[in-house]
Image (cartoon, rainbow, N blue to C red; front, side):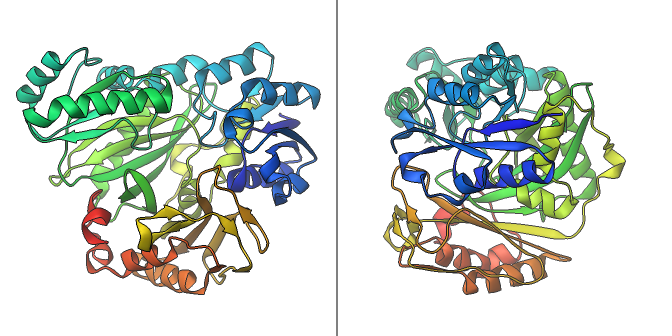
Length: 445
């Protein structure tokens, strides 16, 4: 069992991990930049270490400083949270070489699944459907033109490394392919230090459905059902829910079984999210694996009653999972809204600043995951996510009603937030009917 861990992250996920650790009797070390010196989670940790200035490249992305902090504070493990170094295989390997447990997958599995081309090959071996596309990296424009005409437009160009919509371009004809290929490569090079791209058939108006999986060191793999993450803006998720409102039970089982097969094929350990596209005919296609805990993991926790962070910690400590698939039940409906410090009326531009008034909603079935409070200053240096509202109710209609009420109660002033945009979406007739896809937000807001 782990006894002392360092959380190599910030914000609400740092607080989430600290709370789980303390409930399990595990001591915690928080690292923080100078911008986060007064954060609540810094005070709640057993020990804290400043690792640099607000610039994340000199703090939360600085591997040497984080490893130094871990060694000085004598921790036996590091939890990377999500974002920053969470899917950095080099960081995981350095942790291993230093005798520090990385709370995540083995380095080899992370590298294989982090390379989207290799992940597609793995999916094929595991007999998991993949979107038609290139077998490997697109080397030149001539090859791209040939393949695009072979599989048919529209196609999508994707960066081999990274995610979050960067290095992605949708192309509808030969004329625009050249510019799209060049810009996708350039953006990927800047964002991930790797400009390689591959190509897939662009599925028109798909749903984005993902399966939460957990695997232990003895080869046991279980799933915690699916989440529908179709409500996105520029490939960034805004609202997530479970279960997917359009999946039939037979298809739900097929999707979950496919996710588990893929994770077993990769010899994976710890938490993973296997992401799929669901087309209008109900067919699903593998797109990628997120080798970390997800922002939206509370959705799954609410419908299953399982603490995913605690399972991460137990597995990293070498404990086998006592859970079997039959033990994991899905009850009711959960919905999560991400609250970002952005102005929806101004093209969702970032809105940093100091919160002078903060009133959180409550009531039966309402959960708030956040690190902010009255007087907290939202820094322009980091992701704009400031809170997550998660509701859980017996039916989808009740969950939507509770979420709308909670959003109307939530006061965060004077900064602009995405609360009005979330309310617009939840009130939209098509969302209420469950008839949405990944392009819904762009078309409807």
